[in-house]
Length: 381
Image (cartoon, rainbow, N blue to C red):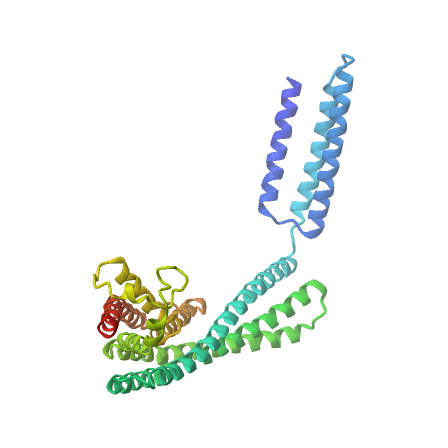
């Protein structure tokens, strides 16, 4: 009965100690004393258990070992109670919370900086891609027989290009403002960490850095709202130019018309041998069954000859980049505490119109491929 009572008492003591630990209010000194007491308790308990086993072999009473264990549990409980009652002072608690906040904020800002770096890299690639796209149009259209198609495609691409660059400038300026904000907060959280960990910074320096970071955040918010108000209508205009001007199909036709058809037909019978996928064999080309395997293989050769770096795929790629960056800009509203970005319906509508136009172009592109193969048949079969 005494043993059961001792066990019940120790269980209640451990339950109370567990509740103190769950509150997490131990200071650094209290945590150290609790850790040291726990280590000693475990070591003493192992020693008592060993003593109990040894004495039991000689038929001795185990109650003394249990009594010592209970006494040590009471001592451990007292240590926990002392640590729990000596909670952090208000200033110490603030210090702990500020350091924890600064550390977490620094990690978050590092991730944001990395993300902005990705967008900046994507921005530079997009600029080079757009420059290459305009040059590609003039090069690939230079020797086309259909001069009207050439002029129409160049005119459309120039119109798209001017809107794209205007939108690109707004997005890049907003990226710069966001980067400035991240750098300012990274600086001040670094100062906070130094101040809380080693007191190596003067408080006025931290306060100055904080005011600069707040000012930078306010500028970034204002710039975000202004940039968004300008970027959304431009994105809608860009989508309208693409959809209303049937841009995807213009670019697709330009790519197919720029193919070196003589190179396709001059190659030896290599398709059948499987050694070349950039030429079509004459025997294969002249199979006029549009649903047959040879005709489909010839279409695939034409598709590959048009390449993945032509006007059509590159235009799609550039529009995808703009859409992703505009989505990221809209997401920054909630991150900045500004709520949901306005005019989201306009962005969604423009993206849906582009997606639908691209879907229709993909279907029509297959017909264009068949037309090219049929034209080659008329010339060569």
